[in-house]
Image (cartoon, rainbow over all chains, first blue to last red; front, side, top):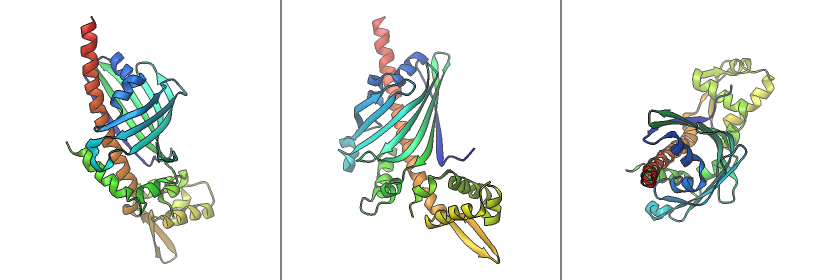
Amino acid sequence: MEKPIKEFTITRLFDAPQELVWKAWTDQKLIQRWWGPRGVTSPTCEWDARPGGRINIVMLAGKELGPFAGQKWPMNGVFNEVTPQSRLVFTSNALDDVRDILLESLVTVDLEAVGKKTKMNLRFTVTKAGPKAEFALKGAEGGWNQQIDKLSEMVGAK
Amino acid sequence: MDVFYALAEPRRRRIIGLLASNGKLSATEICSRFDVTAQAISQHLRVLLDANLVRMEKHAQQRIYRLNPKSISEVEKWVKLTERIWNQRLDRLDGLLEAEKKKNAKKR
């Protein structure tokens, strides 16, 4: 086994039945309502939660994000595994403005009923950094690195 | 040299992993962990050096490699940001689930 570059895991307990949490993860209309983090919407949202089904989302930064307002952050991916009610595995690629891959990652979502609540475990693993990622992260003229710092501060601020 | 190009190759990632868990290793020690030729590993080490991901010091006949912690942080930064974004997304999911629960309760 080779070591992945980086990964993180988030565990949450949702106060909702497993069927509803599953629906929120697999119904395109519901995904569109929560996919964008704070201040971000997803005007393009294709989410075909079937094995081999595609993901194509374009997030749009809103006014709340100040200097980032109007920026578009596209991503795409494919579902590798869809086990009804319990497991979703999909690839998730961050794209640049001409849709070249910056970073490839694999997301695994596991759901488990705990009484009337649902425990969710999400694992995010960076599987590959595309050749243009360094450009994006370190690009002198774009200052993307600074942008990431700023954006981190903004989304981190409660 | 492109950091991410350097990290895109599985053997080079493994070298990074080895250095991360061992602190420092000589070129010979690194080669002993792989089935490929010493020449191939030396090329990978060259790419990692050029990308500034590792540092090398010569001690007598040995070349000692260690990680350059500064370069790694670019990827870490990205991953940290992604983690925050996911946390916010899941906060919204939490809100949506509450709303859907109320909606479903009314229907009944």
